[in-house]
Length: 622
Image (cartoon, one colour):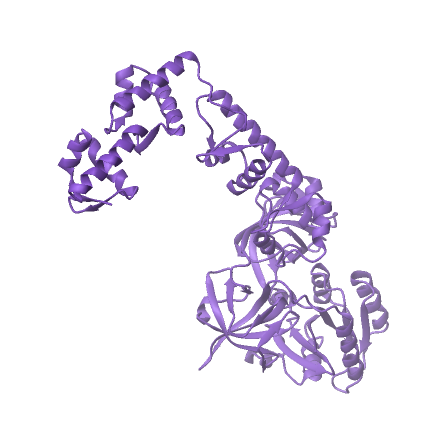
């Protein structure tokens, strides 16, 4: 069975809902007010099955006051059914609906000229429709006459809808499942139900979904497609989900049900390509407040243009940053419609080119933006420099993993997989540049700190403008290539050795003698400085050198013990344990020749080394 979703469109009272009712037997006008006033106010839904094709209809309002509702339903459709009255012809909302379809990329559909049984049919109506819709939407349009009162043309309309369904490509059922929610309600004994159009992926009964934006993760308790219970729903279908774990009041039209739950991220910043501005008759100015319509959502935003102050009507496509006033879930390549804040009219539309931008808009070059608007993945990875993008980050931007065959494309562009575990893609040139920077930074450190054996990797990350993970990857590659050496958690160049002059060498010897002479007693930094009458920095550097050479053992902050004294202390504890398995603080002070000030930190160090174990006021010698 092939599934497609068709959106109705057209001016008010041109017969959209009547066509749907005649085709499906279902009246899409479900609200009492709609039936009383005989106009569509909110979205209506129906479907028909012909042979191996199921066509779902989203019936949208035709009145200009309800364009917001129209946009909420038309965002996920595959094709359209446009109603044009044979009496009135193409009207204002006909044009606005057609422009919105074009902006959203819905170019294939059927124009049903309605009410052909009326006596005052407009002359040349078919030529009028053919010229307007072909010029606007292209050649993939079928135009035919219909009358729901006499049945004229309805069989031809059914056949045309089947041909449309057969010609339209099936939605991609791979990748992340997204259902744009256009209706939320609750049923007694059932609970919360959401309906919408599945635009990608698939979901299964019992699976967890996240409703975004928001923090709710729910379970799919019941699943229906066109009123029938199913175990799986997929892209291209109208879906109803009974969600367990969320109340009706917590959900709203405009949210998106997503599975797996942690795969996608709502955003408040978008880099976009804006097209076809001028439908409202005036320009968009830099910083102007606008309405962004995407999927079934409408969000207020500020439009900050890149490299210009305004977009004149009918200007070529331009790039902009949209700063949204509330989170929105969209992905790269998703279409959107821009409407003015007040008065509310359709301005234009475009495509999302970066849904999770890390950089401010001024950092995007013209070349970057043009490339993002095209292939999208390769330039995106390049723009993320040495940090690159993990497989999860790619999915969060596109909704799908790296497709089969894309790896050859990214490799040809100089992009490599540098971390198999996370699937991180990095532009090779950026990674090589980071490696060069790291080597220079370590060499500068050696020159400035000749007495220090190396640099910790965390400190190295802080010295360069790159993420910690990128630094770790670059460091691993340098270590495996023999360009770096790591010892004791410190990084250094392979040929580097600590360079001490004669004065520093003599001072180092005197410092070591102080610790050796102390025997089993730890010595504090302040004591060494006072004994030698030297600057704190010089003494600290030489102590760090002795520590790296394993001549000293660090007991606590600014407190060390000579390694010979430490070994002697361990032997003394073992001898003591032969006579008595426990040792008190007073006995330990006597054993080490220390005061309580240094005995307690030393005992705590021995506890951490699991040579002793505290039991109340005593230590058990392990």
